[in-house]
Image (cartoon, rainbow, N blue to C red; front, side):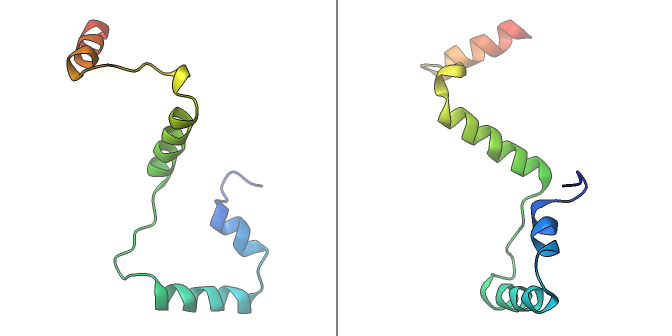
Length: 76
């Protein structure tokens, strides 16, 4: 897949025009008007959060906010 194609583009390439029209109609009828589609930065952050949640032993953890701040300030 070309790096310029996102997942939705790749899916759309596999659909017929009628199927795309049907999906658009469904989205227009069932999604709230203010529904937001996450941008690339948000998707990357969600992916990172899933990685951290899946492998917490690979990432630092802190017992208190003070411990966290001490670590941040020591690195500054």
